Length: 358
Ligand code: NAD
Image (cartoon, rainbow, N blue to C red; front, side):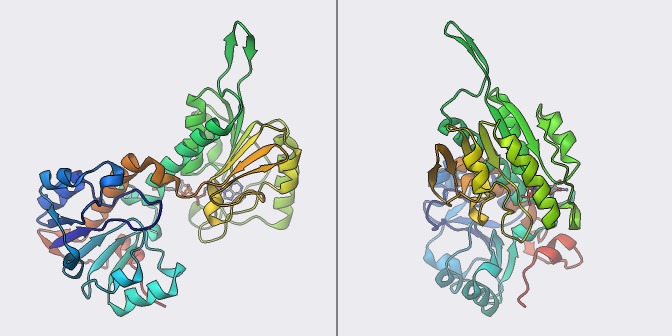
């Protein structure tokens, strides 16, 4: 079985889907591991490290021979067209986001596994790319906020008097939000968080944050948040708007699966914040939680800085890749056994993650 990791071509993408560590593990399972030249360079893994792990340098033709292809972002359609008929393709593929890509996956008969569709069961945790990458994104979001803020995060007692700690509010306490809270706490800020899933109260408190109760609970399918009703949204906004006047930094991480990011912080709320406040909107890629967010840009709204970073996980490419590559290895291990590929469609992780057109 030939497993190939591609060099990512998307602009700004520094991560890699196989590390020397996971190459070793794949080889130990009886596979031959191949890497495109420079595949891991931006993530801190030079070609020599792959060779040392026993992987082999792939030329362009290898794309058409590999049985299993690993990637972070979906390969361009022209490259998909070169894959071997029936090859397995594993990564964050977003087939539904691009009709041409979906058509190519189908016409090549590829066995595509968009890992963002992986069921989030206990057994799947070690393969959960959304969680591992969200952890890095939440961490970086807090660091960006600290960098943009014209204040200290911690309380300081100095000869020039006492500095009060920054007040940080984290909107949405999923995987990214909790990591943002933990990071802001480590920097010494006073941290609050809120979410529409009530169980997040305990999780926020266990990290040393305070749960901000906005009086709205909205749990939907699979334990995820559901969109708010108009009344719930109005209530959340009324309470939040008042509270934001007291906050120095807002980190937005709220999301509802398969939908555009919920709009939670209105432009009027931003204008009501004190000048010198900072908003970092992790949800920028899916439209933003804040109305003033411009994806990929830092804007100034009456003295409030609003940052809309995209692909934050890529900024922590070394550890993000280490985690991502392990996630992929653990997933591939479901169908790569004794040196052969065998799909057990009774395994719900394979059956539910597999992309079928239609
Ligand atoms: P996500 O990225 O889809 O959403 C981020 C957070 O935003 C969620 O906590 C959500 O509740 C919150 N949110 C949505 N709308 C909101 C609103 N209007 N106001 C405030 N907050 C709002 O979520 P995620 O981080 O990918 O995962 C969170 C969920 O998935 C949790 O239930 C988590 O326990 C579960 N999960 C389970 C596993 C597992 O292995 N069992 C693994 C990962 C995640």
